[in-house]
Each structure stands twice: as C-alpha cells, then as structure tokens.
Length: 397
Image 1 (cartoon, rainbow, N blue to C red):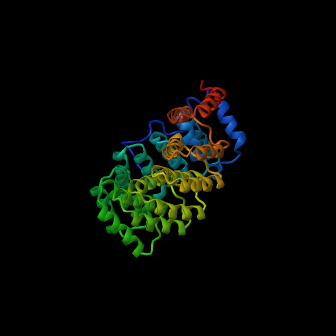
Image 2 (cartoon, helix red, strand yellow):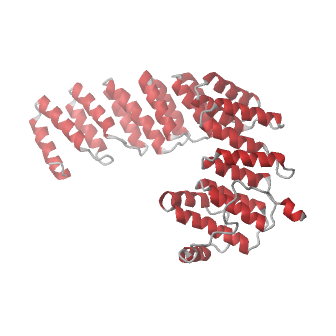
Image 3 (spheres, rainbow, N blue to C red):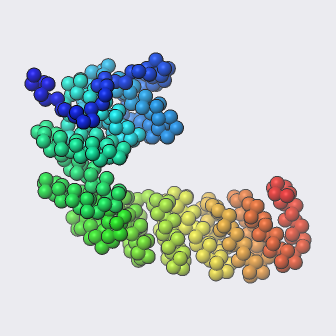
C-alpha cells in the first residue's frame, strides 16, 4: 500500500499504454536488431539527439522507434537510475513527442524508480516543446504539492524560456518573480531568457537593464545573450554598442553567428561605415571565425568600395579575401565590381579582375550578360567576340 501511495498519479495525461510500445515490433525487428548490434549498451556519448532530430524530419516513426529501443534496453537491464530516464525523456523533447515521454515516465515508475525534479523538468520541457502548456502547468502543480521533487531553478527557467520565446514579457516577468520568491536567484540562463523576451517585445531599456545587472552580478554572458544584444543594437542602429559587444565576444573566444553577422554588415553598409567594417574584419580574422562569417564581411566591404568606384580599395580587398582562401559568395557582388570598372572605363583592370577570380568563382549567365552589354556599349567588339566564345564553352549560348 505504501508503495502504491508513493507513485505519482498523472490521470489527465497518462499514456494509454503503461508498457513499452511493442505493436510494431515485428515490422521493425530488423531495425532494432541493427541497433542492438551497433550499440551493445545504452551509450550516452553517441549524439542521439542529433540523430533523432534528423530522423524526425524525414521518418518520425523511426525516430520514435529508437526511443522505444532505448526504453526496452533500460527495462531489460533493470535500470534504476532516474538520470537515465530523464535523459530519455529529454530525447523525446528533441522530437517534440510528449506521449512517448509520458510512456517513459510510466515505465520508470513500473521499474520502481522514484521521480525526481530533473525527471519532471524533462517532462515539462517536452510538454513546452510540443506546445502543450496545460500539461506543463499541471506537472508544475504536481511538483509544488510534492515533497521529493519540488520545483527547482531549472523548472522556473523552463517556463521563463517558453514565454520569452513567445515575446510575452508580462508572463516572463511573472515567472521570474515566482522564481525569486521561491529562493532562487537569476542565473545566466535566466538573464538570457529575460533579454530575449525584452528584445522580442521591443522593451529595449529593460533588456539593457538586465544586461547591465547581469554584468554587475559577475555573471559572464553566454552566446545567446550576446546574439540578442547584438540584434537589439542593430534594431537601434547603434554601431558603437555593436563594437563593444563584439570586442567582448571576441575576447571570450565566442563564435559569431552567420545570421547575426549579416544583420551587422547590412547595418554598417546602410550607414556607410566601411572603415568600421574594416576594423571589425581585422578583429574577426584574428579570432579565427568561420569562413562563412568572414565572407560576409569581405564581400560587404568590396561591395561598398565598388558602389563608390574606389577601384584601388576594391582590388586590394579582393586580393586580401582570395589570400585567405575566401571567394565571392553571390553573383551580385561580382556584378557590382564589374559595374564599377565600366563606370570608370577601366577595361584593362576589369580583365585583370576577371582573370584573378576565374579559378575560384564560376561566372553566371547574368554576369556574362552584364559583361556583354558593357562591352557592346563601349564599342569593344573584339572583347565582345571573345566573351561570346567563352559563353559557348560555358554552355550559355
């Protein structure tokens, strides 16, 4: 009787079948046999979440089967570690599968393993990832009434994060207040979610306040915080603040997100801050950022010089980019450079430019058309004839 009373009752969202799913075991026996042969034990080092996410996009049933297989292994091995079940529920979060997460919870109880806060947190996160806020709140209420698995800091962070992603600042603030009232302080993750909420709701002053408060507490911002602060400064069109954040990031050897890099270069280009972009490029190159990010800066600088017909700077910048093993990423940038040469009537320099990039960049049809129109307009018939022959070889004529 005592054991029965100790078990958690989740009547409103109990999985229909309290035992591992076996209805399709015959159909998928070959897959399970393969998993058994490849993984003799339940490996925690293998990137299961990545595998499941990849499978879920193309074959969701197979993704679910992997979790079933792992759950069956836990049962066969009579696993009593609640961490193992929490990790398995977390994998359900990666594929947004709440029913299977509840099934794992039921199987854990059937093995006599008592739930913990970490297990409930994993269930809450899975509920939130699948858009089931009601279930998440019900789980939270169960935790509040319990003695052995009370809400902890991560529990509150889960709800703060969920509402922050929705841009619901009032709900985010309410959960922060509840967290503080329960005796938990704001950590780096909490501040990150608060800043995200403020940026999404355009409460920029509050975002700045939280950022400064975090620093004053001696907390080091994570990449998410930096990215959201950069996004805010881009929206505010504040290159000075962007420069400060980037210095902080690069000093801490953080990686610069490609999407965020594009927002920064677009803003600097719009404001005409080519010298400032040059300075950022030097710092980014020294910090060994990935080539995609560096390409955005190189090409943006070249584009800005081309727009103002600064051919010496264009040619220097192209040479610098190629020296670092980076080439043009889109035809539009090449076309801007070509147009600059035509405006300056620098036809010989144009030929040198084309010769310089031919080994690293394949000319597109639109570029050939642009060159043809330019040569025709300038009366350069010989160059036009050579170009037509090149187009034939390239299959464009």
